[in-house]
Amino acid sequence: MKLVVGLGNPGKKYDNTRHNVGFEVLAELGRRHLQGLVQAKFQGQVADCRIAGEKAILLCPQTYMNNSGRSVKACVDFYKIEVANVLVVCDDFHLPLGKVRFRPRGSSGGQKGLQDILTLLGTEDIARLRVGIGEPAEHWNVPDYVLSKFSKAEAADVEMIVKRSANGVEDWIQSGTEFCMNQYNGL
Image (cartoon, helix red, strand yellow):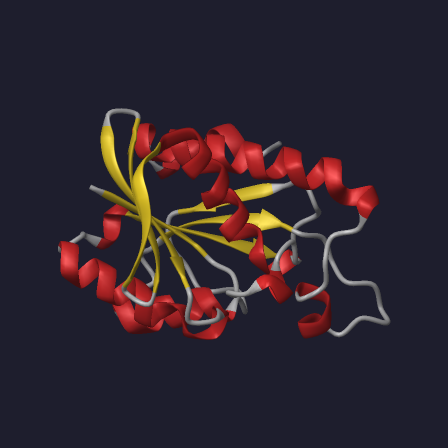
């Protein structure tokens, strides 16, 4: 069983913001693969899917970004999921809009939701898919930037990157992180 975690903030106020791109990727996966209803569990929204012949759980923590680890840990503990079978999908303002990067492990790189997950699971050996949202201009501070909405001019790029990221998650489930690094990181 695989667990795919999409990071974001709950509530309409945060819809279509840069920080919620993880939620958008999981919504795309849900459109493709959802089996049954989305349920409120583990302080999150949870859906069961079958992707590439494997059972997968999609989890969008509803704890707000910085406390995402509580939701992820509760789900991992309940289903007894090995950390090798967890993928976190999150935004990264160090990557240009339209770029993605798979990594098998490492630090959070300053992404506070990812840091909370690493802390509560007690390991940096968590695969992640970082989705580029572009760097803030000089006049933006980072918190305001990541909570800003994508512009209309960026809409086509956002749609493309969400679909490419969902394809990447499907490939991760079927073929693993190393395959995905070779397929996606250079694009």
